[in-house]
Structure formats: C-alpha cells, structure tokens
Length: 169
Image (cartoon, rainbow, N blue to C red; front, side, top):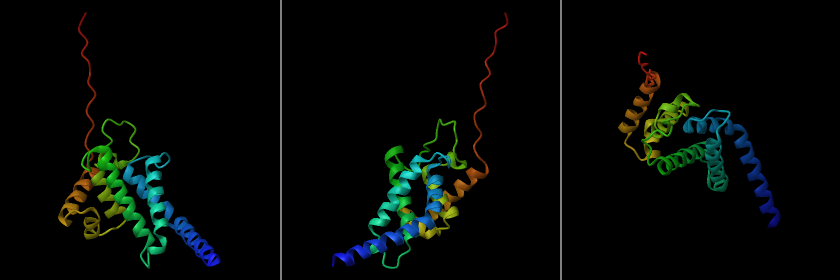
C-alpha cells in the first residue's frame, strides 16, 4: 500500500514537473502582462504564478482529463482579479497612476482591461469563456477589450511640463 502511494506521488511529481517545464514560461509571461511589471523585475507576477501552480499541483489528481494549463490560467486570472479588488478597491482603477517607471506597454490600462486583454489577445480565450470566468456579460467583455485596444493604439498623452515664468528684473 505504502509503495503504491509512493509510486503514485512520484508519478504525480514527474507529470507536474513536465507540465511546469512546458507551460511555466508562457504562464509567467501572462502573469507579467497582468501585473504590468518589467519582465526582469516581476515579483507580483511570480507570486501570482506560484500560487496558481500550487493550486494546480494540489488538485492534480482531480483534473480527470481536464487541461492543466487551462485550470492554471483560470486560477491565475481569478487570483489577479481578487488581488486587484482588494489592493486597488476594484478592477476599474489603474494601479499605475503616478508611476514614472512604466514596466509594460499595458501600464495605462486598468487591471480589468489588462485581464480581459491578456485573456483574449495573448491567451486566445473566447469572449464567452472570458465572460464566464469573470462573471460578466459577453457584450461587456467585448466592450472592455475594444476600449483597451483603443487605449493601447492611441495612448493618453502625458501632461505637458509646466514652464515657470521668470519675472523681469
């Protein structure tokens, strides 16, 4: 009995290790896009991915033919949404206001816009699936994605520097 359990655990560990070796880089890139951090300095993205992978490993035996990548991506998205809700008071506010070190071209989007854009454009998730995952109507997902794309294609201009007038002496 004990040998069978050890064998099952070893197989599970090998399968999970192979999954992470194949999908870890892409999932980390998706997490980095979500957090709008620079690729070489992305602690929030790494924490998100670690938590999502830990959840996938914990439920590995209960996947029963489900795609582990899809499950991990779903958990990553939900965890990001919850974190944005708690950290920034919702998905609608951009967390990058006041930042001058823009780590990503997605810095000007709200967390919700980034989440939907990454799911739709980077991950190729259908509108209906993204809507179901986020609990939003499909039309709302479509509108948010279109707004995010418009913002990326035509980014908001930064305020012009204020020039101080010098009084004549």
